[in-house]
Length: 120
Image: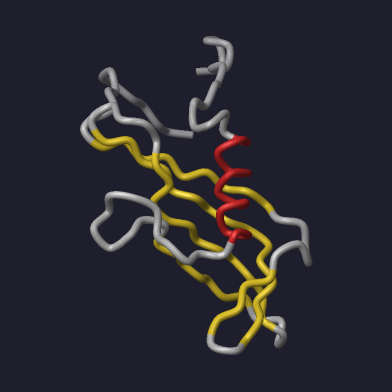
């Protein structure tokens, strides 16, 4: 691979975002929209922290299959219209997926150990 890197990357703390993906067991979550059912198999939850505030779930993107077997993408805004709290009326199953994503990422306190310096 012909690649080099220089500099010391720094995260902008004004608005940090993290996407956390979770694979869902087939048949464990069905999303209904417009009278059609979609079997979700993957979700990507976007968490954000503005100005060092606690992490908030902003959006969830589902990959799902319809009864015809075709894959579709469904996006759900998790924040209310003025972005100051969670959107009311969302099904409990969606919030359970958000909780799974947060738990799998250590409540978005992601821990990671870099590879041995001889590898980079």
